[in-house]
Structures are given as structure tokens and as C-alpha cells.
Amino acid sequence: MTDARQSRIHRKTGETDISVSINLDGSGQAELDSGIGFFDHMLTALAKHGGFDLEVRCHGDLHVDGHHTVEDIGIALGKAFAQALGDKRGITRFGHALVPLDEALCEVVVDISGRPYLAWNVSFVRERIGEMDTDLFEEFYRAFAMASSIALHVTCKAGRNAHHIAESGFKAFARALRMAVALDPRVAGSVPSTKGVL
Image (cartoon, rainbow, N blue to C red; front, side, top):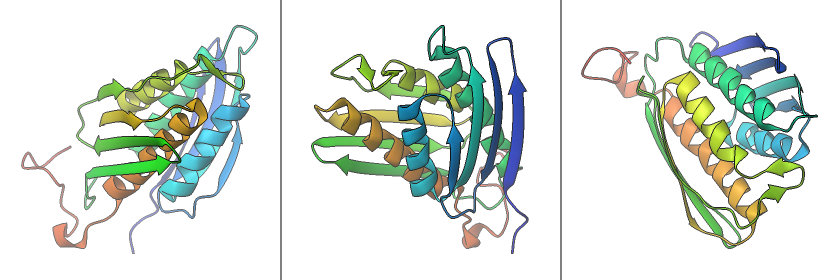
């Protein structure tokens, strides 16, 4: 039995006040209040399909727009994710998933590498889903990747419906992260890198 892989982050700026907690070995429970309904829907999918217990509370300047809220949640959640991983001993490190949702098909590939990078190849057919601007999805993924120091590739291979594309992407992200953070008994608690550190 390993120590609990969980963490809690509080991040407050002049634009947002965010509390985030994550348990990487949870059961997919989510308590969310970002102030943006569709974003909560996506974070629910992240928790459920990643097997993470996730809490997100955000009071943001939504009277301006959703940019600061979405980006800053990405930063806080990425930091919490990295903190929960600790020294990364025993993890699988790499993860990938190809997830369909009706006509949409998204692929996400993850390397918990210590080197932050986002490769983004997703186009949306409309500018908004509910009250969320679709260009904010890229901002979330980039903020998460930078704050957690992972390499992240997100590709939409097919899709016409913006809701389906976004949800397919988040489900693929969840499954790829789930694979990458899984403990591999064959590495016996060592760091999965020839450098000896991630």
C-alpha cells in the first residue's frame, strides 16, 4: 500500500480565488463550482474517467469573461496534480487514449516528463458551447501542462459537433492521465527515467 497521492492547492490573485484538491487514487467523485457550467461538465468527465476525486471551487471575474477562471483553474489543478505525484516513483509515466463520442474522435498522449509542452491540434466548429468560449480549452490544457510539467499532445481526429469534440477530448485526457499515473509493480518504486529523476 502506498502513501496517499493527494494534494490541496489554494491560489488567489486579483482575478480569481481558487481552491483545488485531487486524489489520484480516488473513485471518480467530483465537487465542482467553477462558475462556468460547461467547464464543470468537462471537469466532471475528467474526474470520472480518470478515477480521480476532484474538488474545484473558483470565484473569478466572470463579469470580464471566462479566460482568467479557466486558465487559473488549469494552473491550480496542474500544480495539485504534480504535488500529488510527489517524486513520481513507480509510475507508468506515459499514457495515451483515443476516445470517440458519436462522430467525434480525440486522441491525447501524455508524458509525465518534467518538461512542460503542449501540442494542440483541435478545431471547433463554433465559438461558444453554452457560456464557454471554445478557445479557452487550449488555454486550460496549456496551463495544466505548464504547471504540472508534463508533455501533452491533444489531437482531434474527427468531429462536427463542438460539444462532442470537447467532451471526447476531456475523456481522452482523463484516460491518458489515468494510465500515466498508474503504479507499475515492475519498476519497484524507481523513477521511470534513465536520468533517475523526472
